[in-house]
Image (tube, rainbow, N blue to C red):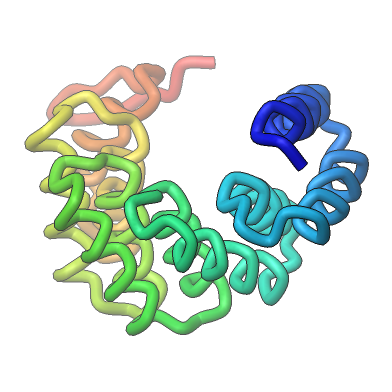
Length: 183
């Protein structure tokens, strides 16, 4: 198969994905990798689709293949970290996320996922540290503000939590005595 033909197949799969026709995209990509076993893009897209559809073993296998074919594909590394976290393989997931951060040290999505990984394994101090790193890079990041706010709520630190939560939603009116959720 020529490179041009392969690129057309990838483009078709991407259009199917954009139109939420995941099964059709999976079928096209599965057929493509049978004919072109070195196409890291097809393996990456398949791994990502399987992650979205919660077929974690297939996601892991395809993402690992994509990475073995192209070690610089940090998106595949990032998604593999998510897969491993969802499989509760926290230590290996952390190793993967840290590899991504070596290549892209200020990658906000990876910092958030690393924080979530620590939070899921109940290592809240480390989770908080990574969420704060996100806020150092983007103080208005809604996801990090929400995650820190929820962690503080769970600790019973309501006033401190509301400071973060109001930044995450923009829908909380807050003063020293009370707060109001605006609907």
